[in-house]
Image 1 (cartoon, rainbow, N blue to C red):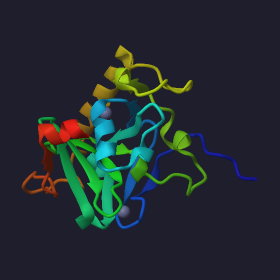
Image 2: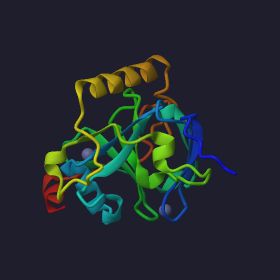
Image 3: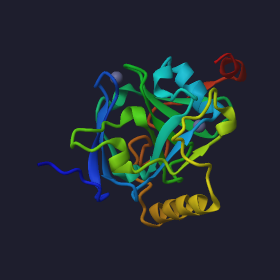
Image 4: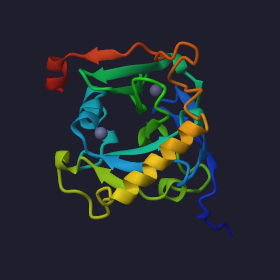
Length: 209
Ligand SMILES: [Zn+2]
Ligand SMILES: [Zn+2]
């Protein structure tokens, strides 16, 4: 009889775009190895519309995201199909695949901030019999719910508490101390520049989304 592992032990998780051209591996993934939340902000919704992938949003327009250190994310296939988008003046780079327009995740504009916010659509769950909730735990909070486009699901996570903010801040500080901001699969380690030249949407392009 197989028992489900709820121990929260770290696992290596396959990463893959919808069509399979771009793939990789996320290592040391566990509920304590990252920070899962749901973002309802307008920019995340605009990103899904830009990609014509409304399927990556939940019915209220939320994106399920897992923040983790870049050194634990590797691309092993199709890196040349990775693209980068920036919504007008925002200081967030949004990464996706050109082949099937799958969201990969978000980063700051500089690799010095040691976080990749991996979008759920790029993570593959279930190969080891464990669901996303089993591996990552439930989302710790929701943010920007005022931009939600529908009623939140009854099981939506709570808004962030001070404790959750502090928990996230201490995690990111640890990653920085441990030097886990590099190597990043999305930035050149030598020049600190994005591996794909960001396409910057103008304000009018952004407004049209
Ligand atoms: Zn693809
Ligand atoms: Zn967002």
